[in-house]
Length: 475
Image (cartoon, rainbow, N blue to C red; front, side, top):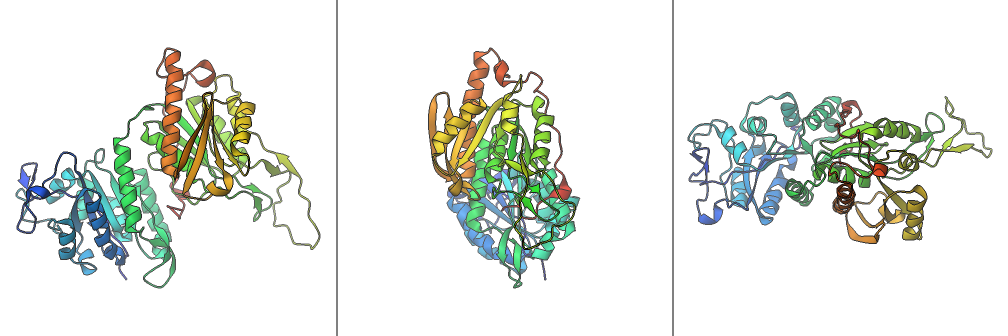
């Protein structure tokens, strides 16, 4: 059975000159309303040969409705699942399928189309197409224009869709890891019932979700970069304290808030490293990542990097206790009660905040009651400038959140929104405080002695480890 999905890329409007070549053709509308304006956003939607290609029709409609100028490019296999006529009607433009299309005057469709697009979205992206891109193999129009794009100006976004076994195959995971390392953005896949009758990871994200993600990508491109060049370290996710080889002490933190803050910092121009406990999330794009399991490992990773950073966001739900003894073999059930001896773990945030040249520290407080009161006390006890309070019972594992930022000026509530939106609001608030403190001490590149390390200028270069790529990329 062919793989379930294929890429989608940003589209050049017809009737507009691209590098001296017009894309106008009898199949493309030449009306004034179809001409690209300076405010219009163009996206090339690439469709590959998978069952999920039927969703591309609704995706095209949603993108057009959102104000995008959509140019569809299909592989030959994609045309077996949905017709070019349908997509032409929805996009208002001729659909391109042939690398040797003679409607392009200079014969370079892959150049003309890729140069015109603000972004390229491949939806669905099949296992075969992902493998092509990972190896740089170009044998059709869509794969060639993806490789030919200006990577610094035109992001490439893939929405994988395939059978669950194909997604989990080591070769596919290696290819995805390679693309992530190359700066390609991966959206999904989702889990659920598949066309083949099996259930698991591999479904393409729904068109409404993809449309929202594309909006977010375009929004981030236009965001100001107040933290350009500033180094930041974020902790995220839970820790796992082993009791024996199969049991351990952990919590239900998903890591979503920490990952969102790391992405928001990156969007604000910061050079970001994330130290993450075990999660089912994909490692954020263009962010250095260090993966750990235990509280002790997280402490070591943080302390190894802390002298290089100026901002420290302590968001991870670190275990407060760890077993005194970890058994090398699985403990057998005896029927009797069991007592575990536990010892306190080191408080990472307090340890960092107490350093002689500590970075600007932001803590997070997840409480089940008296949220603001307890967070205020936590901020005072740790001696940090900012803490973010949220209700644990509603925030953990959820995609939305509502928080209160507490600093010297008081309390600043942020209403319920997606965690990424909340993260951008938090980072914007922190950036103002951080830069204001830096300015008050005569340097835009450093904060007060108590909140800055003078050696924190060099970028962090710890690479993402592809072998640890999580399978659930959008959990």
